Length: 255
Image (tube, rainbow, N blue to C red; front, side, top):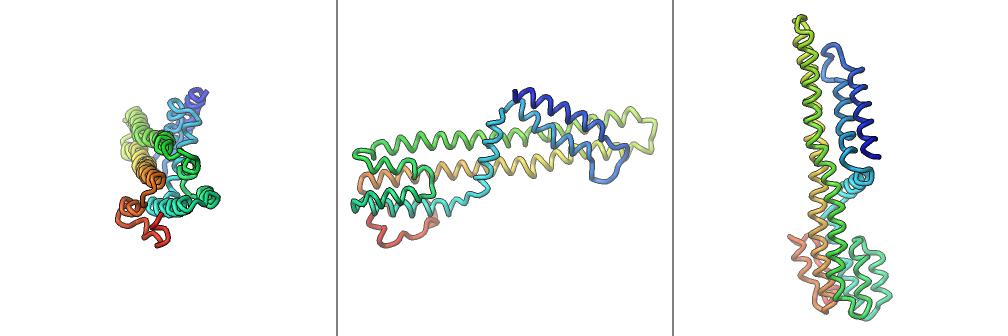
């Protein structure tokens, strides 16, 4: 179904581009090129990606734009200290409350395993499984924006070729050669702006988001393993990098 929608969208885009083709150079505003560059790449994207994948990319991008790595790591480590302290003192109800209020979804999902007898041995495997699924979702979103970044310049080049063909058809009118050439080049200009000014930065932002999630998952794995084995969590602050997680409160250092 998504393939038919993509092909139909591509056809509508080409028809709309043809009907809005300017006859001369009117500055940097080129309605036909804008229609082509804003309509064709998403339509081509629909041919190779279903709606679920595209919606997932939008959701992941919104998460990546709101995500602050240092702040998230600091909050996760603070929650680990609180959870470890409560668990060490045998206050399982308070420890469960800490987990329910934790900001990191992996900690909320995996932490309850430590409240069960012998659950610490399952924590590491569960973290690996959940983090893999989480990173696969992020990678899927990254691929969508990388695809748009690759496709948009090619579509702009096709628009330029069409403009050059129209210019060659009217080669007898020498006064229009300059404006026609300018109009033809605007499609490539728009394509480069969208590819390297929008889609590529979005893809890079999602890539960095996935990398930060991977680091956070490793820190969480080490933290929960330390709690299960009754070891100190103080080294997590050093592993978080440059003291970014902040100094743990004195009461928590014993956790």
